[in-house]
Image 1 (tube, helix red, strand yellow):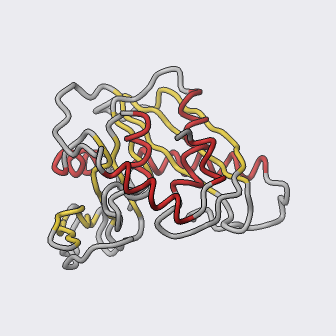
Image 2 (cartoon, one colour; image 1 turned 45 degrees about the vertical axis):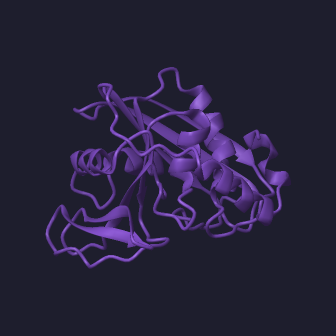
Image 3 (cartoon, helix red, strand yellow; image 1 turned 90 degrees about the vertical axis):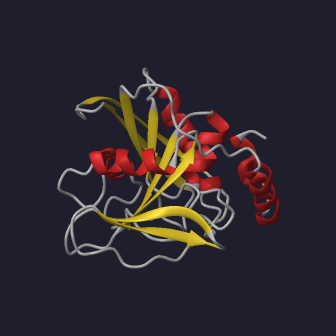
Length: 234
């Protein structure tokens, strides 16, 4: 199935496709060197069809910005929790295709396998493009965990039905944790270690923080309703 076909799916068909993709997930150590890393973010109003996507590329491990790409797309797929990848992936793919250099690892603002069907946007994108991906989410979708200590980089394992699906990471003191999970072709430990390395004094890691700033700029510059204030963290 092509991402361009997603908007024609019913929610039931989208869930069935997630079950198909789930069989292909590979959570395993990444054996190749990481010289570049990128952060990706999506922004949209859940009641509108326009989707803004941004990807910022960094050298690694020094995290210097070396490129970026963005895309503006449209979708009619409904806003449904657990199925947001069907709204977001097509726009993200447009931005991805514009990158002159493809990153060794892509960090997405959303879930990896910390999803009820293990198919968050990071896993979904990693599977269809066969690239190593990590999910770094600002809110929990599923799974249980004990609150991490109120210290930077304190962490707590997240479980769902007895399966380790992610790590709740306190990236900054006195802030809510972020939720890290591997997407595809990378291990849990590598995912957590990479995100820890990308914390630069803010709650969210630098790759997705910069991607968020980029989609902010694109959205504000291209909004059909410049006076409207949207929730840029949807």
